[in-house]
Image (cartoon, rainbow, N blue to C red; front, side, top):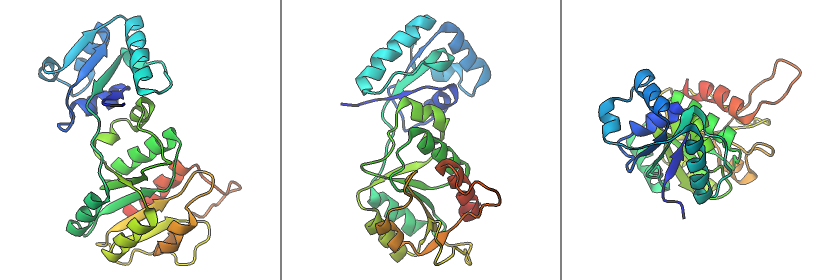
Length: 253
């Protein structure tokens, strides 16, 4: 059973160490990597003094990493920068948290990822969501990307700043957000009710769909508006992470 997160990538490690909601830090690193961390990042000697540190050879870092990857039941990828971090799991939330946030924030920014399964896409989208100040990213309780070491590396620290919410029923959740006055907007190729943010003070819930099939019909039926990205060249579609960035600029920019 997973009871810790394994963080790779120097930027992701830095942001995790600075997250006061994390605990039980252990940094596995070479002596050179530790020096680089102090020299080139916001991490101070005081922070490292309060962190358990295991100094290893370059080979030792990889071997310890292999053991912990196996405990997490994820495929091992070579660890960059000569270091990795283990710490308490990132706190995630259920839909009751999302509804409370929506009631207390008239201009809430919500991003819903309907069955996006690729870790690289999920992490890239989360990084963009953090850039645009998204308040919550909602993922399905099942059939979604996993928060693996690769996910944390690609997200480049964004996971520490965006609230991640798990939902069992997206149609039910979106209907509830509609009732709370949040404008639900689905990215679609077939627009029937085009997105137009007439009130800039309105909360917005942007919905993105699965890489190959898009948003499910059940979710599309409850969305109040649709957003279409018009192509100007011969390629008519974008990778979902690129489409997410363009869509967030239109909805949250």
